[in-house]
Image (tube, rainbow, N blue to C red; front, side, top):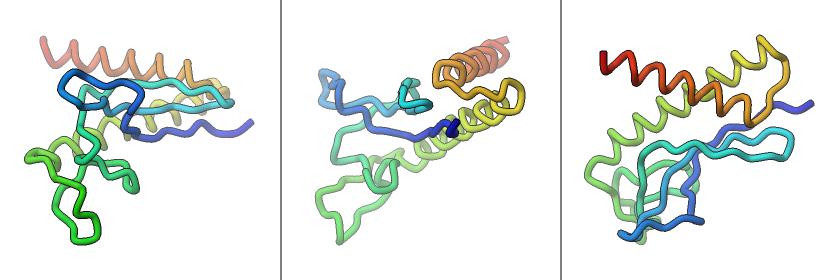
Length: 121
């Protein structure tokens, strides 16, 4: 059985009224994908498809890409959320041995909700 894959994606299948698309974490295992929202969205000209992150600065090689003012902070937060899902993926593989996209997503969602509750108390 192959290992689950976790990636950050600019989810272009959904467009908000302001023209932005959500940034999501895709978990793929056994040819089944599940998506987790990160709470962030960006326009296509702000997203770097090659590196799966927001554009932080202008580049002569990519003049069509425009950096966002707070891209560095958002990229840091996206990386933290991505790493948290990777940690949950490793914990699931150690405890159960079976990595399904549903199991990883539900465990990551539960862990994220617990963190949010503890921060508000």
